[in-house]
Image 1 (cartoon, rainbow, N blue to C red):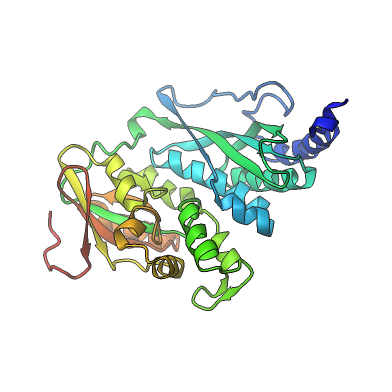
Image 2: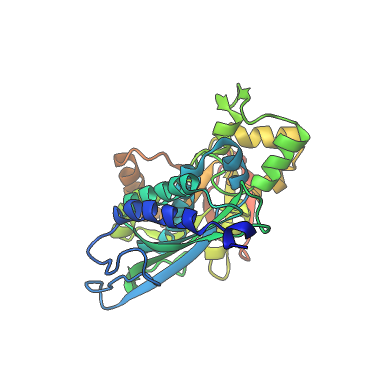
Length: 349
């Protein structure tokens, strides 16, 4: 018997890696010291500030991949993965340096791998991040032949005096929200259970309230907020940042609140995307569960001192970035309380 008889095609892997190498090289910059194909990626830290701190994060795409398998949105999920990771280190003030990916499949299909890496490389290039390596694994019997898993690791850097960790947050600080484009890469297990299994909706079906097909909605990009945040970070106006991923605002905002602080978020202060209303109505999902599962239309939270609010809003408008004032830091024990916008007239801490 040969390895191919057991389901692993070394020749297909070789072809895939040959095509990947050309795509990945487009993300290289002067800091990348080795070509793809070495046992490790090499990246020079020369020129970084002496007090620079490396910030690392890793994540996967989750069950959004199930939608990509059916509709073929492989480049999109590659982009989603990079953008998710870029956001995760941007909340600490870090700029991305390099990225590594991991693709594991039941049957290696060079065309699909090429699509995934094209999405990864495009998002890396946009973020100024080098894609310096990764791993492609063929695992028959572990994954179905037409499925794969996708994960990645990002490393960035920030000067120690520019690190954002929420320690400067005080009572009365304002909370702004930047809009999401959809589910991003979180909550798909519940969304699929409600829309595809319970309601028997088809991915190709046009949904009037969404203004597009269900599949297009569920493959909406996980956007990167780096471009919007960079000028605000440069000016030192941001006291805290929370990337709204799994757990929603309910679970993610408390991660940056210092002792003695809580947050009040005003429901109705931003437009909830129609897809979330569709999920809540169709699945009879309680509001509390929606708020702790999905981003509900807000993908990034910014905590800003009231004295800097005007400067922040002016900078965001200059970039034509939509934003919403969604709440305020209140006295509390690190939890988020929700109120209705306009429910009270006094918005002081």
